[in-house]
Length: 318
Ligand code: SF4
Ligand code: SF4
Image 1: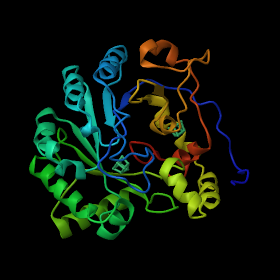
Image 2: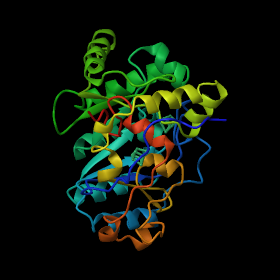
Image 3: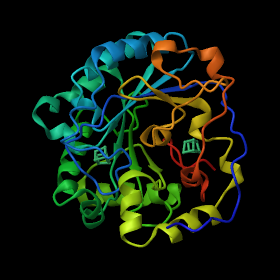
Image 4: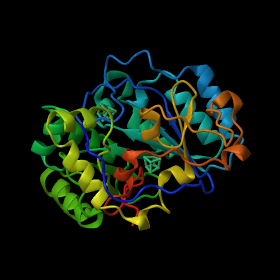
């Protein structure tokens, strides 16, 4: 059992202007990674956003000033309404980001996606645990690294990762164990050199995320006896400078069933965003003005976002 943690507690976190509308279209994934905070996998077919809920998302989006739509999963590309959602967001003038695990691009129905994305200027944010084969396969399973490199080649061939701001390719790194993400800038240089020299592939930017102590990574921390030490490390590395940029301040995260959360992590913990009167927020009664008055729901997992340089879907915060 986790002993009581010393250190700071979270004051009330208030939202700022909504900039990013994140949509998690389901937990179906072609992979089952050890650190997965979504607990996604090939057997998660029941948790899939329906067309009706996609339309509720679009109606809610139309009532906000969010400029970015961040589509995630699971492997979001496996949702049958994924392309419809992307096209509808593009038609609304939104900047669309796809959170891609790379290997899904090699599966039959997704093989045309690099060109399809390029034609629409969709930003691709790809998870790749490391630029070295051993570290990546350790976290994601044997053979993942080679498939990921093949997918990166397809994206490069479609124009991604070559400095064109319309075809931006970002890689997302998270540590392979119970330690914090390293320095983002120096890692980006090292990864660019390593991937270009050894595999001839390029990308535009690297973001480094801390592993959050939830879901499958939490189970691993418990099973390996690392939970207490990891939590103490997160608390001891608390960086108050990271609070201003927390993603829960400028993002809303919608789940596959239309429930609304302050962030993706709260979504995985089923901690619903709540209006000031305590009601859980759902797309069916979406009220952007009232949402601005809420306090963000926080918990001990939030120390994963404020440790070290800070961590968010956009990478380091300070
Ligand atoms: S970490 Fe990403 S790729 Fe791996 S199982 Fe989870 S959603 Fe799928
Ligand atoms: S997990 Fe991070 S983003 Fe989510 S509510 Fe906590 S501090 Fe905010």
